[in-house]
Length: 280
Image (cartoon, rainbow, N blue to C red; front, top):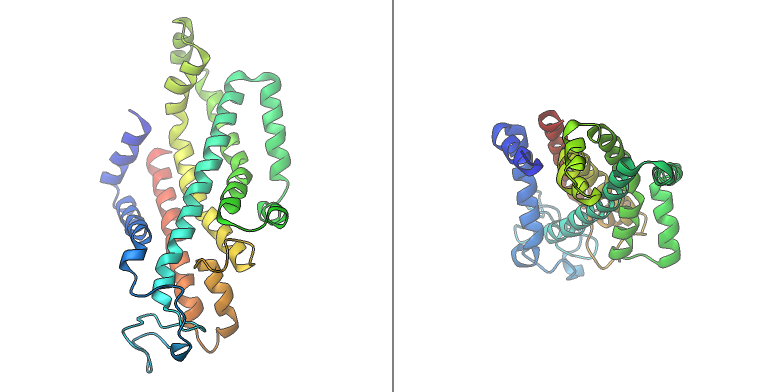
């Protein structure tokens, strides 16, 4: 049975997976259609409406359900639009890291020898540097931007996938069906793609699911430090940075972006843990 069938079967049988996956699907749909569903332009400023509290608090208005920020911008619109950047960075960086790491790790485990030692030593060297500091150093050179953040975080995360792919490949390549495939004349590429890859995919899917939340937190940290995407683009980390100075007078400026980030990160972790129980 292929890995994606395992995943869908687990989704049907485990309510934890169904709940977390359903919540993440709603967040993804809201982020995708954010320009259509948000009530206001997230960057539209109106100083006459600045620091309005949420609608259920005295002085609030249902035209701005979560209140407004220090520039009079609608907070609900900014939180919804901010989900686009967080999810895009999380998913895109995992795609980059998974592609590079799984490819190098699988080939290294299957081929062995000098190539395996080279890949593992490179992974060890990169793991010795905190990826946030490495990312900040690269962004300081090339400048902040969404593409820079995605590429740097993605390339900084490949060692985790490489190590897991290599370890699982070393185990799988000793199986009898791999020897049979080679004896029947299967090329190295065919053996890797048709026999090794599908049998190590479950572990990589679990790791990738857990890594999405880590990459989202990393993007939020970079935006909080002003080194992420441009400040004109609403992000949860950027909103936390802007609202920190008003935390005691306008609690909603940090509470709602923080709750959004926390909820999505917990959902991804919950999904990854549940997949680990089912597919691990």
